[in-house]
Length: 411
Image 1: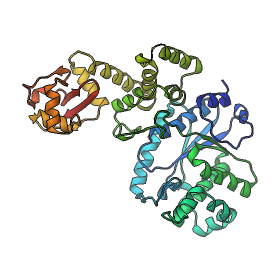
Image 2: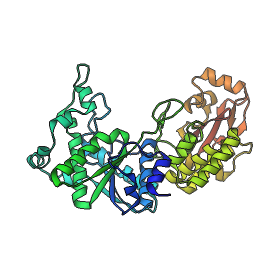
Image 3: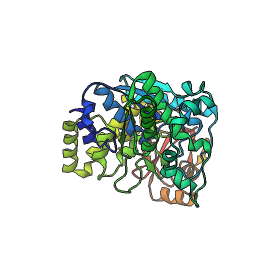
Image 4: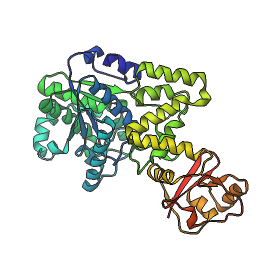
């Protein structure tokens, strides 16, 4: 399948400056994607765009991935109702390293160049920037941005000169990469269209060259109508210290039937024939959740590696099976689960609350009385009042409530 057709089929088309998208099927081009280091990890929303990068690269195009050390010092104000809190240089450096490592994990062996816009901004003088760049940007264009109008309205929180200038800084990134690296395309999410157009206009005004934008729509949960990747517990992160591999796998395993085909197209590398086969099996028996299982495994493999994905599948099957754990199970559980520190010889009811399996000691007592609690996959009764040292193996204990709620404690 040609790239333009593949992008259309997978749902990676929102807005583009190309009059004819089939130009992407021809001579290889250099493109870039930028991410600001506002956190030390990307979320599953960011992952969708990085997956789109994979398709561009696999079709022969050259990728430049930008981690915005300079833009991260200001923060993108688009979509924000009030001024951002500024990050320290130490925070930005830590965040840059985290995001760069995730780029490398998700793209695997595919070639790409990693750049940081702080490298070219750190030596630019303020007056030089105003003369060489600011002179070419019309105020009407900047004031016309929807978020600027909103922040300057009677009910708005106002906007600083720093945040107002953000799109100008990002626009210069495109100009710099166009001049120095030959980049002619910026890819982005739908929410970055305005900032990206600033770069296209800057390139046209200063160099007379043509540059383009390709934006992908934001992924929306069709069942809830909200941005995909948001849960009651917060965002779903790629960093396993923020979202454990088990929780990451479970997030995908529990996606809605309505959207699972779209998520398979966006977040996996399955081709049309493979995906159609998965969906045929799924639609033949939706209770078996074949599509969700395939999705969960494939995305976990991309983000955390094949070994971890296999461990999560095996651990999930064992935890919700009937067998007691073997030593190797505890080792795998330590790797794929987040754990909570418990004190030795801890009252069982208190442990259930600490692990988030009950909201109070009273509720915990009821769960135990109802036979809803299992320790290390062995259902317990009311005679057990404490977690003692013998319950810990490989320094952890696995406590389950009902069929799905699991907590891992460590000593």
